[in-house]
Image (tube, rainbow, N blue to C red; front, top):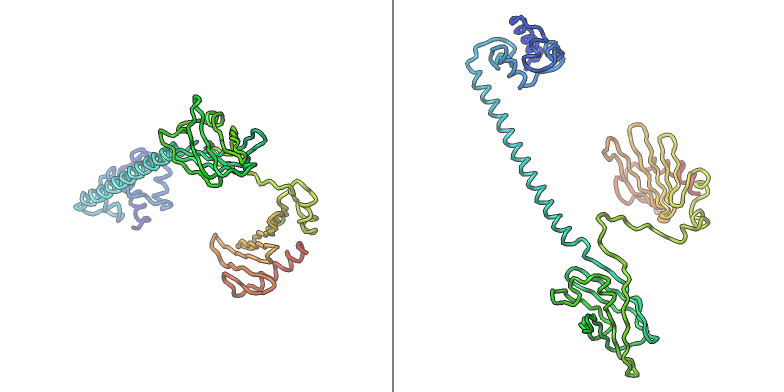
Length: 358
């Protein structure tokens, strides 16, 4: 479409009607500046606006599209076609939105069901207990929604057979009787002694019984100490704790002297920020990383110290231009685009490796 001609045609029709730009704008519900931009061909009117203009000027849509007056025999057909296409698009859009809504609801119901079925259903306890100079420790008790796992751990004597029972109303409900070295796996049904029992019920009523070599029967009340329960909505993770992290001498001993002098370090990481470059040194992993902005490229060097391994990548507008892995002392390119990598290796050796890691 010739939008310059259309703009002149809009102005022509407006002046024929003796309308100002503001009057025309009010009739099709746009700003006056929009009319001015159409007439000067600064902006182009959409199909919907051309339809609206054809109606207020009482000309055919085809005349608006061509920018000149002609017979309007095909006008109704064109308008009908465009409106039909618009209706089809709306119908398709509504169908897609409805499908998406149904999918979201189905997925939400699935995850809600999964959450209700699995949340707060796994309990892990450590088993300990002692009686009459006999003891049991480091045992493991896992209770799930439909199963129970029991491992006895270490018993101070070596019984050939044990019996674990749940004592309720002075009635022994035997959970297991047999070899103490195996791991008990039992399915929890409605008739199981531990069905719907909480920690206090189990801990206060769980006993281990065995016969010693002297034919004495020993009963040990088992104490359960909770190690884990899946009652958190969000996994928070576990902080990595190492004794050496608390020892400033051991942490600084892992940092090259040049990095210690030039970088800002904490217990885990050393960082140096300078123009177009960010250098980091992971103390515990011993990984030296350089992120460099060079002209219109982003360069990344990652050097794994204990493997003498360099990983390089260059990107431009999110597109990878070059990528390789290089290892000393074999001086061979392992993976990636291995041709013409000497400049990157030389730059890393002279400006980073020899400067900070010696």
